[in-house]
Amino acid sequence: MGDDPAQLANAFSVKLRKFLPNSAELLTRFLRGQRTFGPREEVVAGGGSTVFVMCVGWASAYRLMADGNRQIIDFRLPGDFLGLIGMLVGGTEVTLETVTDTVAWELDRNGLMAAMRDNQRLTEAVLWSLSRDAAIVAERLVSIGRRDAVSRTAHLLLELGYRLNQVGEAQMDSYHCPLIQKDLAEALGITNVHMNRVLRYLRQEDLASLNGKTVTLHNPKALRHLAAFDAAYLGETGTPT
Amino acid sequence: MGDDPAQLANAFSVKLRKFLPNSAELLTRFLRGQRTFGPREEVVAGGGSTVFVMCVGWASAYRLMADGNRQIIDFRLPGDFLGLIGMLVGGTEVTLETVTDTVAWELDRNGLMAAMRDNQRLTEAVLWSLSRDAAIVAERLVSIGRRDAVSRTAHLLLELGYRLNQVGEAQMDSYHCPLIQKDLAEALGITNVHMNRVLRYLRQEDLASLNGKTVTLHNPKALRHLAAFDAAYLGETGTPT
DNA sequence: CGGGTGCTTGAGCTGTATCAACGTCTGTGG
DNA sequence: CCACAGACGTTGATACAGCTCAAGCACCCG
Image 1: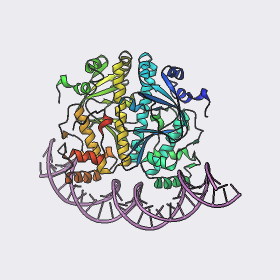
Image 2: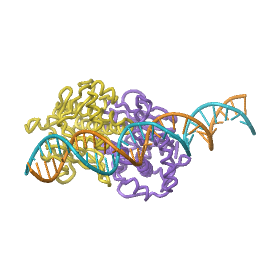
Image 3: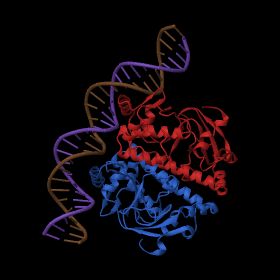
Image 4: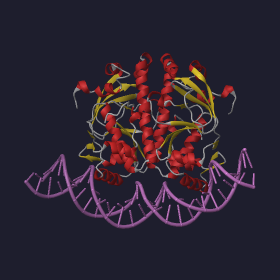
């Protein structure tokens, strides 16, 4: 999957298909333009207030602390909105940065708001996306608050797999993951050194491994049990993996 | 604050006044009824899919873990929606429970969705509320992920003060807080024993205290510095406290 | 006045952080 | 083709924030 233009908004369409049968076509109406970013590049609006839709690549939303530490709030995958939370509540001090080469659509905020007035399904799609994003953040909050580092890691690896699967970018028990150990650590509230030890443990126990940008879930069932993972918050109905 | 009917939806009106000049009147159209709950009572929909708006009292949204531990995701105050996140993404495994005696309005989900079609301002108000709720959860995620227990606590006490202040339920540097130490601990990802020690520290350093259901911020400036608190994510513009 | 609920404190333990070093891969320029 | 630099991964030793277990205290209410 890559720079095939026909596929650019595919993830978005797939993700929101139950709300918006013709979502990609619809977005075109208030599209400001298609933007491309290199890896580890900050994503900023071209001017005025905008929202992005991820087409290709991974990004992260994070908070930079005064001491230089980062807390990654969420990873953004193809089909996800970027900057939706900050669209209405300003000054949230959250930075958006790509992980990989990225292609995104830049949407006009006012155009989007106006279109929502005419299209009930679009309104539901945006509300649903926002709710789902909030649910994902809440789930990570639960992880960091009440699960140990191993369970947290298992939970995140499963979540990413499910989310990629929902937009057709994951095989059964493995997927491409461009994150480095430091990224995972910063998302899970632990240090990169400890992240390394946790990954070693998961590898030794034959549960999961991250090798050469590929995550392999060697024992998804045990992982789900270990992390008490329930995909309902992602809008899942069944259990694909 | 209390059982004055005219004031019931006051907090909601105040909070959303920049979007909805006549919010309370508007909600009446798809109001299912007014519900009252005792303290520590689970809030469940009367039937069908509904959303609540808090009028009087405090509540919490939490996840119950398999081992009996709780992670409180957010406290819900007067003027806040209750169950908005779970409205569209089903089965999120989040329980809603009151802290105090509570009065809430129960709204019909479909009525709300329909009203949003006709009223752009209502759409913005709901989106804004959802965004703000998400921002609050994200902020707590940052706290738990990258701040120590003392800073986390300071941050939460400040946040609650600001949020209450926004709906006219907090004095300058103190407010009524019905939470017990265990509640705070469960929101901050620490144990109640440690919460106790943290509160003692804050008291000894003359920073803040929780005494007899009253939070007093003895040194708000130092607290804000300690927690690197910036109220922007709450939709603040200035600094009221 | 007894029991429950919440608060407080102590002692010891553990999961994770910190600090520091070394290994390994990859791309780059001489 | 080698040498080098830089980024990432790995490992060990030690420190400490916060957890667990346990006990006692203070208050409120029936």
